[in-house]
Amino acid sequence: MNRSRLIVANLIGILVICFFIAAGAYFYYEKANFIKTDDAVVKADLMPVVAPAQGVLTSWNIQDGTDVSDKNIVGGVSDGTKTIPVSARMNGKVIQNGARVNQVVQAGQVLAEEADMDHLYIIANIKESRLKDIKVGQSVDIKVDGDSGAKFEGVVKEIGYATNSVFSVLPQQSSTGSYTKVTQKIQVKISINQASSRVLPGMNAEVKISL
Image (cartoon, rainbow, N blue to C red):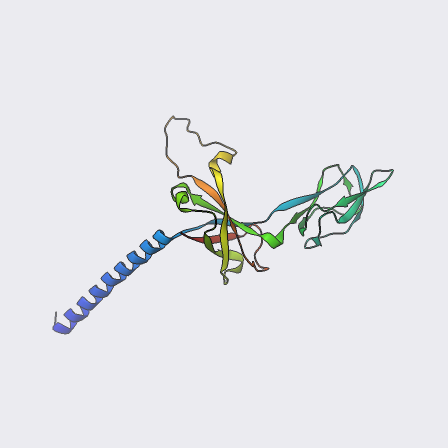
């Protein structure tokens, strides 16, 4: 190998070493200063609009996307003797309409679902080993798949008091008597400030919590 090739090879080797040192430093810095997860989803407080009595839905004034206010009359149910008003139960937007005029309904039947779109939030599932580093009030950077070009700011609002497995329909059991340790996750509620109209309940999200 001539001198020039040796110099080039040495330079490449040095660059590779520097790259790995920089990458290691970056990952150490990220782990030491942030908690990141893509196991997160956009949520909104939901409230059903229900039929107040058994009868026929004689009027219905909402559809998907309709904005409603708490106690607004959105329809009426006739039980054969009188018409009983159907009312919204919170300020929000109708995200699912499942009713139509002249439909026979039962008392308590869900006719529509409304969501508080003005106060969206994120539920992030955080590994139990990192929970000790999270505190209410920490700032959070948020990315939402539905609006991938934007970054939103948020704040840690609540930290769960139980792991997700506590609420599982089927508890984790082993019929053989063997035991495999599974890392548990706890839900952390994060506010999302000034969410765009593209951010919708149920969308996947990524969060980066500043420690």
